[in-house]
Length: 229
Image (cartoon, rainbow, N blue to C red; front, side, top):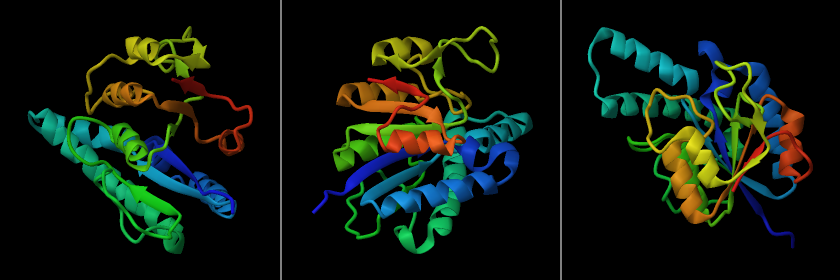
């Protein structure tokens, strides 16, 4: 019997609801690909991020009054829960019956898709993905965002930013730092990065919009993206 393969996916909110609009076309393709791999004895834990919607709510709250960082975190977590519920309902009968908040949860189910959200203040859904990997004894996390690679600096602000195909955790942390902010847009959360490094995990960062490239990654073929280890 072929052993079931577990994939931990950190799915950026920028892919789920970019610009405040549900990404129907992307989600249709994403859903079809995941269902295709279920037939090949894969299991998926998909952790929903907050993305631009989270930043939009954070900015709105801060424009009204002074907000504590912990409350901005709770606001972001609420956004991830809504995004996660969207994912859960589109996978319907293939997914576990509820969104899981705590990544330490021990789940006994025959369902091959588990949908998760943010959990507690102090870090992003990326750390939840790392904690899921620890929980299920998986050594790799795939981070799907709206960028092709990790870059040496923000490519949205710097035209001379250079893509990085492979990087160590120590070098990566020099780029993203060591502190978490609910308003930052980073390829992988600094707090999650520290934990992933301690657990000796691999993290792959790639652009989820390129479904074929994502499929190649799942098949362990050549893909466009960054490997952090």
